[in-house]
Amino acid sequence: QLQLVESGGGLVQPGGSLRLSCAASGFTVNYAIAWFRQAPGKEREGVLCISYGGRITTYIEAVKGRITISRDNTKNSVYLQMNNLKPEDTAVYYCAATSSNVCRSAMNYWGKGTLVTVSS
Image (cartoon, rainbow, N blue to C red):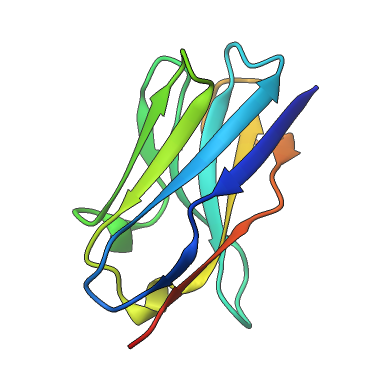
């Protein structure tokens, strides 16, 4: 069983930066971990995913050049570095994991989310 806990959300002004963290516990080997987000009134969408070996999959083009994903397997953590944030990035951000280690697979485990609000 894998548990995921997100942290690092908050209120930031447009153009600002935030770094979200996803801490995994339990059986953590060979999991791909992804970040998803759900904006108010919208469906949840995938943002970025990283395999256990570090291969990155981008789910949405809108984040390219602004949002990056990384992981530290020694700390069982995955990070989402978000720069030049825009109001449309406002959402609850979730991390999720798949035991298949393939980012296009369905996610088996989900965290509870952390709220990011981009507003002046």
